[in-house]
Length: 279
Image (cartoon, rainbow, N blue to C red; front, top):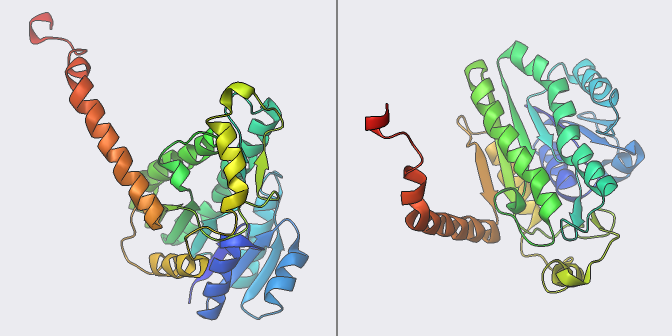
């Protein structure tokens, strides 16, 4: 039996993962800004602790973690799932919109992780699963600021994996593509208030298309939850796990573009070092 600590667990992928872990008989600490939403979703169960957690509030991560440890004694798997999106060109995004997005998607993730890690290090056991995105591997017009937050999550995950591996703690960045949740609803995907006409054919087109894609996404959230359960139970989990055929295609396409860059610009890159006769 494992104990899970899941942020943003009242809906979307977080709720799917929490539900699957509960049905597997594991303990689940499900967190959300409104704990009543958790009770409505999951009811009262002996293996469930519904806890309030706004990841942007400095004191709440430690309080939620202490409640989890008091109830179940340990946290085996942390799923950093809380977050939201922002659609709009990079130039269209205001300073306030950018700051708010980073405060949830990056700084909030860090706050929760820093609260959980001491207990994992003490036990020399644990798994941190950071929910990244297809946008954490490649940038896309209309999602530039959101992608920036997920690129940050990828970099943090890789660094933490190197730091924590000798201590018995695993770290994985999970990269879902488009899954059929409410992520594209206005409550989860915000739109920049500013609109610049010059971006009509790039970010503007994305703005217009998002509504048509909502609840038509190809990915199955229940199957993603099954994949996360599997990930948490393998002895050597990967540093990143792409999920969805759209993510696999995007990664393959980026690899091909990067190969072209090296083939075209590789000689220039190699010419920037000191020559042996200059040393």
